[in-house]
Length: 358
Ligand SMILES: [Zn+2]
Image (tube, rainbow, N blue to C red; front, side, top):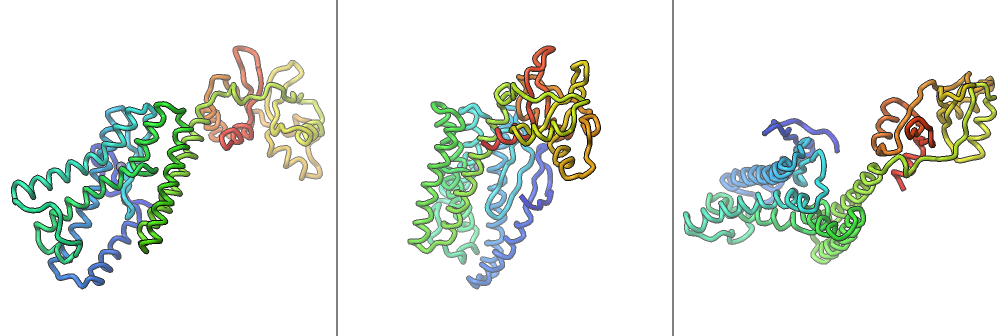
């Protein structure tokens, strides 16, 4: 994500700016210089950029407030030159909720456009859209309002493009997941996003428009990430019982170290459980120990010479996410899976990682 700066906190949600927001200043200076704008138009342009960012922030708060209705908090809202991002603690999986949260952002832009449009049409009695896209027009307050109106309509339309990471992509995925399994729905949405990407890039090439091309590349990359994320999240919610190994090598503290090295080499077991003479689980041999002992000439002779005395036990109904967190936090390589009093199998770090990646 890169470095961000905390700007302020609104209704408990930290508002942050990505460092690259500084580039906007350069962009503004470049545009003012390129178009040789008058002072009034330059001031208008700077204000317009600021107002645009405010509209983007309000759009993101729209998502956050809708999510809050479903008790989903927002970690933070980050603004960058390519837009805003409300990082929600969780994505609502129920299609209806996901649709409401996704639409809440663009709705804010419709509300802003309606208010500005209403003022232009009914109070000022004038047109809603500026004569041209000449930035020189920004010198006049009425044209300034027309630009604000146009920007909000554009933000609305752009965000409804049915491709990740746009809100329209989320709506599409939610609609698909009414009938399809969620991971598959995300995959279909990702492929549709990629089709749209090709349309964008072809259009960009035929019209020589770099911005469109960049948007295309951006959609392509992010839509793939969304799919990977959903797939991993789905896997992380799987149960230990789906991954555990039922047959495993049981080592004794008095066994020669050779035994674990042979088992490691001749099977796809990576880490091992260690038992004492009375068949009590007393420790484990993680993969790193085995690798170390092979490298070391004067390695350990028996298992008890080099073993971890950490014993980790998980239940078959635990989620893989929980097990993975525990393994990372406590530096555990293998867990015994216990159903009641009985050890029914093992689950190791390698198996968890492979399952998550698959
Ligand atoms: Zn949005």
